[in-house]
Every structure is written in C-alpha cells, then in structure tokens.
Amino acid sequence: MVVDKELILNVMKALVVALCISFAATPFVRRLAFTIGAVDVPRDNRRMHNHPIPRLGGLAIFLGFVISVLIFCDIDLQLQGILIGAVMIVILGVIDDIMSLPAKLKLVVQIMAALCAVLHGVAIEAINNPNIFSDNPYWVLGFWSYPISIIWIVAITNSVNLIDGLDGLADGVSTIAALTMLILAVLLGEWEISIICGALVGACVGFIPYNLNPAKIFMGDTGSTFLGFILATLSIQGLFKY
Image 1 (tube, one colour):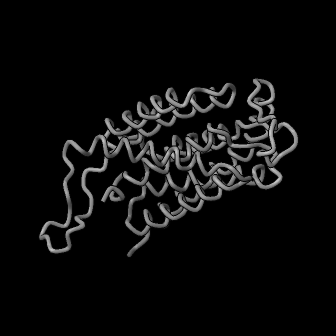
Image 2: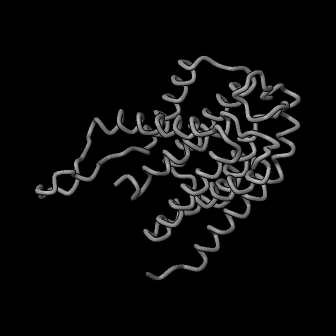
C-alpha cells in the first residue's frame, strides 16, 4: 500500500493541534468548573478523593477535538450530523455536571443526538452475515438500520460513561480505542476518518496529565458521554459500518 506522506502529515497535525488545545484549555476549564459549581464534593466512602474536585474536564477534550476537526476536515453531511449530535451531548453533560439531571431526560437527549447523526447518514446499513453457508456475505438492514444504529450509539455512549470511575480510566480506554480506529482507518485508506480519529487521540492525550491519579480534574459526564458518542459514531462511519 502506497501511503501519501502529506495525508499522514495532516493526521499528525490534527493530533498535535487537538493535544495542544486540550492541554492548554484544561486549566481554564478547571477554574470555570469551580466558578459555576461543577464540582464533585465527596460525601460518602465510595469516593476515592477526600476533597472537592472539578468535573468539567470533558469540555477541554471537546474543544481540542472540535477545533482540530474544523481546521483539518472537510465538513460533509455525515460529519455535520456527528458534530451537531456531539454539541447536544456536551451541553447535556455540562448541565448534568452542574446539577444532576434525571436519567430519563438524559436518555431522551442521547437518543435525539443519535437520531441526528443517523439522519445525516451515520448509520449501520449492513452487517456481516453470520450464516457461513450463505452466498450473501452481508445482511442489508434496510429500515432496521435506523433503530439499530441509534441503539448502538446510545449504548456505547453510556458504556464509556459507566467506566468513568477511576482516575484516567475512561480517558485511557478512549485513547486506546481511538488509536486503534486511527490505525485501521489508515490501513483502509479512510483519510477523513483518520484525521477525525487523530484529533480524538490528541484531545484525549492532552487531558491525561490532569486526570491521572491523583486527578486534578474529572472529565465528568461532559467528557465520558462525549467520548462514547464520538467513538460510537466513528465506528459506523465509512468502511467501519461493515
């Protein structure tokens, strides 16, 4: 496979820009979190920390990712849907980090964000046929593409949110997942997705120094649901949907 050095350079630029923005923005986001009351105050023995820690760090990850994507990517219909849905998820996360929202309300907004991405073309149109004796290698989902895609996006969004229980865990897992998709995208020649994945890797890595134990700031629902949403939508974009 012939690799275009200029395309690889663009991927690296997207990664570095996202990393620098995320790293530089985190201290400002930390101060903002204290100002608006987005702080995790330990009130029981389940908490690993013994002092108030801000939990709006995902906003820095979001800023690093979005700015890098806007600079280096061509914004097509699918990417528009992903970014609009991501903004919805981040707004929901910021509000939830300030004041705890009901689970049903959060689920409704997550479904709306997923639907936004799906209606913009980010949908699982076919899956591998599990019947090895069939001549048809794929099952075309047709109408079922919409509900299955929405369920997938919402499930992954909440899965990342659920693992955000230890310092650096969700950020580290998301970094590994994004890096894996980046490598696959490069091997498959999906350069647009490569740049998006590179931006996501950079944004996650830029936040890690502040989130390692003992954490100076948590990513909160703002970060965990955003990362889950982006990973879910990227995993079904382009050739990844097959």
